[in-house]
Image (cartoon, rainbow over all chains, first blue to last red):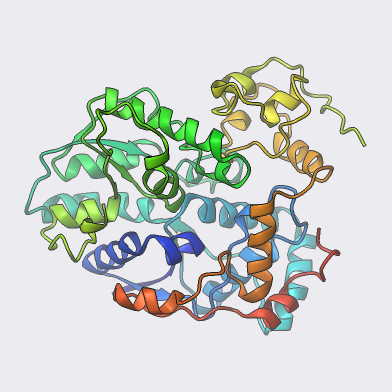
Length: 274
Length: 127
């Protein structure tokens, strides 16, 4: 069994237990043993853009922990993924920055050489899409719209050279489950969740536009693969006054959706939460 | 102090046009680059679409960092920083591991205040 470090991130660890649980079960089904970070620390994604100059020490810590074990990190959130990729990019480009980060890591008896690979769970799943397709026992007869973890694909300058992720990745996985993937104009727009930190009213407007675009496209549910998308589009949906005849738009994480198609019982996939 | 618009930027508005905030009639960091507003330093969804569409490879990320240093840190981020320095976790949830246990999820051990302090610069020094 392949072993990797699962880094759900603060938001998923504390708010989206069903997403984390389903991720662990699907990874296990695919032959991946998901180990936990021995001493968890926030990736610092909200500190990157002008909040603290020493933000890089936070992702460097987790990267160093994984490097010591010789394992890749699997992430469940677009923001965590982005900050880990950004940290690796800067630390490789600037040896003096790596030296400074290591001077801090040494205090924790750690060091980082820059070798840890970080992979969002979509990347793990799309690499195994044929195995997933072959394991489907209950093909999904739904129209599913997708909200992609956009921060794992932009900006291209920080992505690894061999990175091949695209907005087609989730489409391919969901199609393999038998579901119809709905086209809708706002599909590749960011959900806007991060805006909640500065302007809740604006975040709600952006999220509402995305959800209503999916509704107009004929979606019966939306599948996501990011804690931030879940936060805004699911937990804040009741504040959006959607034009949907008073009905909620159900949100489900991609690992949960896979679990349903692969025959996991609904309660084990936490579907009751939606 | 006024932050100068990067010299590479010719204010073509492509970043404004693709921004989900300006599309909803708000001001964002793209608005600031194009001198449409001085009130958009924090307004960014971190989707980085503006960076992808910029024809002149303007360092929009760097511009945003410089602009934000002139502004107050929003309250929710301030609280998150407090959480990180308290134990290495963004939130201040009580009964965190008890709730995880109800879902059959493993308890999480955090890095903790003392080790976070060793990892980060001293308060004030790092911001």
